[in-house]
Image 1 (cartoon, rainbow, N blue to C red):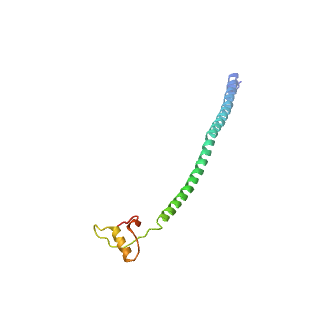
Image 2 (image 1 turned 45 degrees about the horizontal axis):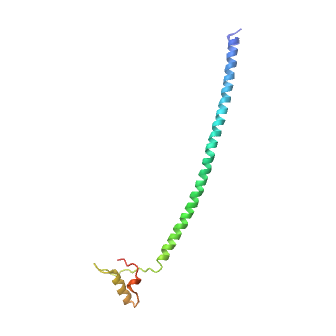
Image 3 (image 1 turned 90 degrees about the horizontal axis):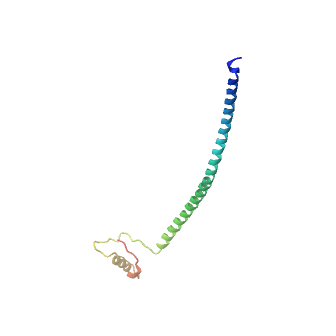
Amino acid sequence: MTAADSPVSVEFITQMDSYVQSSEIFKTVLVEALNSALQETLTPLYAEIQSLKSEVSSLRSELYEVKAKANDNEQYSRRNNIRIFELGEENNENCYDDVLRLCDELNLDVKRNELDRVLG
């Protein structure tokens, strides 16, 4: 009888084989449990990410529309505005008076209260 065939060696080998098999089973169960726990944690997060992406897309679209509307309103508010270049302002000169004088020279009936703002 060899040392490998002794009852202690056979029993040791059997126990080690059983331990290795149970370790593999434990590892498999542990990996499956971790995967399941991760899936349970990540699934709602993925759903929330998709929801937030959709919301960001919607808000970008809305922002584009609001900017376009603001631009339209700004242009509409300027529909009665005019710009006069090269009027030749002097120091301490009243810009309202300059514009009214120009309107008078052009035979335009414009009153001071009809002028909202005159910038020099």
